[in-house]
Image 1 (tube, rainbow, N blue to C red):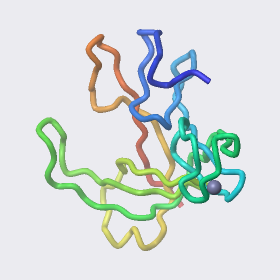
Image 2: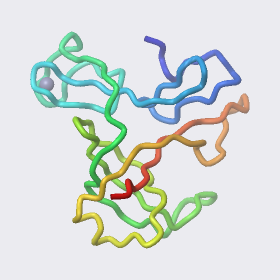
Image 3: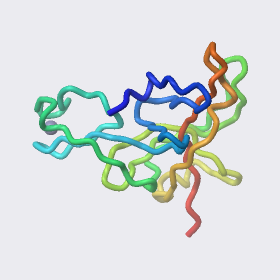
Length: 150
Ligand SMILES: [Zn+2]
């Protein structure tokens, strides 16, 4: 499998996180690992052992996680580093079938902290990572969450 951080194709965006893959056409997706010994899942593609049971790399299988999940927790961030637009909602989402991912929740006009308790359904989407570029001018793709309308 291609290392997501070692792409030599300079006109494609790069993944902002090790659990994002980008195919040859520039389409992003998620990648995760599952331990076949205990069932734990990880938002990672480079893990060499299970953090829960200690099973080695051979017991870890790579899979494509679901793009929908349940909002586990969220906070409204009102202060950020220079250049980071605030406020935004930082969320932790339990993807269906695992793993759990942290990311920015978009489309939250009217979002109230109480909504977290309702187990809001969200979906993963991909977009440019806030206009950031590497030193060669390549852009990055990041994941975001959006509420799923009932
Ligand atoms: Zn395990």
